[in-house]
Length: 280
Ligand SMILES: Nc1ncnc2c1ncn2[C@@H]1O[C@H](COP(=O)(O)OP(=O)(O)OP(=O)(O)O)[C@@H](O)[C@H]1O
Image 1 (cartoon, rainbow, N blue to C red):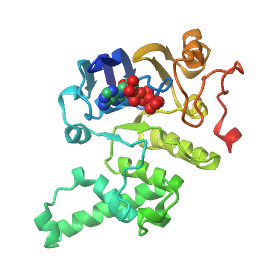
Image 2 (image 1 turned 90 degrees about the vertical axis):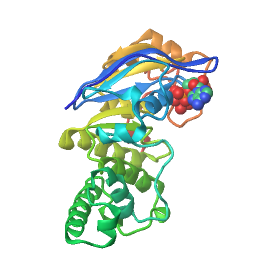
Image 3 (image 1 turned 180 degrees about the vertical axis):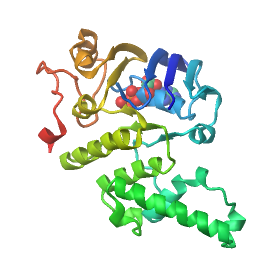
């Protein structure tokens, strides 16, 4: 299992510095959350880690590789999978086919062998389908394998998105707002799946999430960004009490638009970090 080490990460877009010398480490098998007000640089950070954006400066090391030099498919091939804030599934395909697509990098038989249904390609296909069924059951969508994604509820689709990332057999999972737009019961369920992905599969998880209840409950370590800079890091309960963090969330410079956003404090001035149960 590898550690993810981010050092001096800087991203500039024309005149704007979206990330400014950001540093953090995700220990193997841990859950690390990145939080911060809107526009703090969280998505930019995810996009660099998954190869979608290029870093202007700095380094992202994982398993001996420098990720800033690699394209998204090469990063995925190193065992880094991500989910997206907006669901990125093929809506007209079945759940099973979406998960098989997520597994694409692990399949050896080429298109021709698979198309001709040669014996070795058939055996490989059966092996992958069996694993996909296991993963679907793991995230609680086993009953929907044959169903097209389009007709399924939003909460179920978010779990399929997670299953698709797990189908890659990742050692590091990047989760971009996994409970955004979910109701309370769906949030509780997703939190449990994420907890088990770490506990049972040993996957390291980097989480961007506005729901502070989720962050406080799931994360071992939290990094707080504001205007592209790291302003705090540490265990959730420490970070929650950090005056710089409270100021960043209460400062009027940002507009909160997402559900469950607000100060990760219990001061009563900003929305309190409620648990998922409280919100259910
Ligand atoms: N492709 C881009 N081109 C120009 N500016 C960008 C680009 N992507 C992000 N930015 C800017 O970089 C800054 C950081 O944005 P980013 O989306 O990373 O913040 P965030 O913390 O994810 O915010 P949110 O919580 O609203 O998703 C913002 O000022 C944003 O407008």
